[in-house]
Image (cartoon, rainbow, N blue to C red):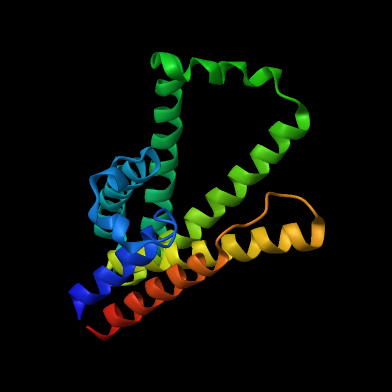
Length: 188
């Protein structure tokens, strides 16, 4: 069951990038796409982060305190990493122009980052209390995908802004495959 669960989650996760064509998974050109390659590298790094989070927080007597300590340390590391990137990586130098941005832009970005940080803090509790971090990561991705889709469609339909959502059926099938993989992983 475990291999089938991983397979379903993998196919479901990459289906939108393949524009619904599963045959593309068998080509090198699919994995050479910048978005796919960056996603794979990013997910590998996130897996390491999640394993560290799980090791530091799972079933600790002081679980809430250990999650808070890890959260604070990881956010401090995140801030330090961003600062180093901005100061020492030439391709990031354009970020220094942020002071030329309008207040509305900065306010929206700040609000978005605050919501993201709160979301990370809440999800950390899930990693700390569930025995298998890979399942939590897949569930997080599946729920995020569904909510992003619903949010984008709703904003476009009711508020009239945002770009049109394309290939909705592929994205729904993608979510269903991920959900089926998660259900299978829970059985195994």
